[in-house]
Length: 145
Image 1 (cartoon, rainbow, N blue to C red):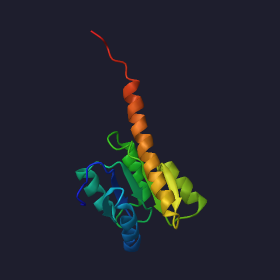
Image 2 (cartoon, rainbow, N blue to C red):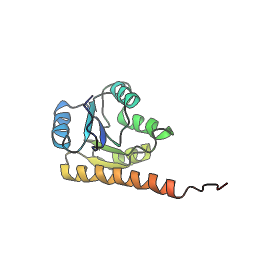
Image 3 (tube, rainbow, N blue to C red):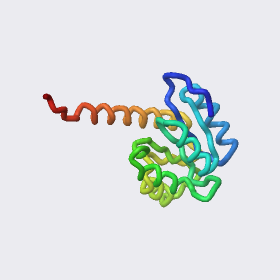
């Protein structure tokens, strides 16, 4: 687990390819507190210990479950359903994109892609989540005694 720096969003990356892990970490570490795992086991371990602002999920990962199954689980639980997920994968067919979005992924990006597009997407999702929370709070009706 990476030491968290106050003010930076928390990012979980689940990616089975070591070179892709290194690349993502090297580019994104200036912007995020990052945890990286390569399997369903590591996903559960990190998710149990930390709160994340956004997740990057590959489809093909180590373990018994693939990334789409993990996304479905994440989005089916009240405590984690609002965490934005970017499905970032080498699976590039249109059916892969449809499957990722149906699983609950907020955005689908196929590799290779422009890393700046990924960065902008991550921040857009985080801001969208923050705005939703603000709207939910603003729209709450309070009883006055």
